[in-house]
Length: 115
Image (tube, rainbow, N blue to C red; front, top):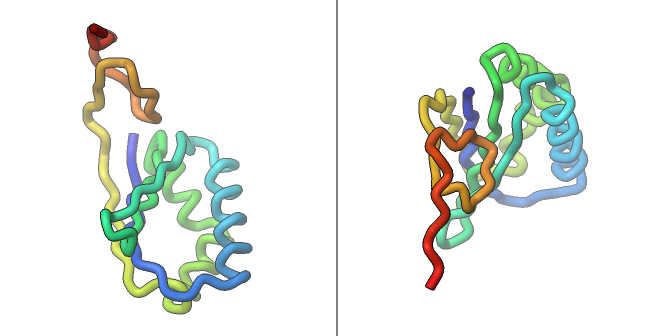
């Protein structure tokens, strides 16, 4: 499993941004090997991290070559104050089972005791 974290700051988001953003979201969902996406904001809400989860490198490469994604990349300076991409391999994930997540829970489920 791989993640592609797209970390960025926004400037002016226009109709073209939202059009392409919708097309990119649809392209990701339609790519074989797409597992899901989550978004996080910094505490001051000025920086966002969109994390895409992929089953394998082939899926990630297919998405990155999608025409809508390539079109958006050409125009990024209109919408972003800056960006950084981090591609990571998920080698382990676990929890107590009380929180659903895209990644698998690799430990036996243990529910917290309630008082």
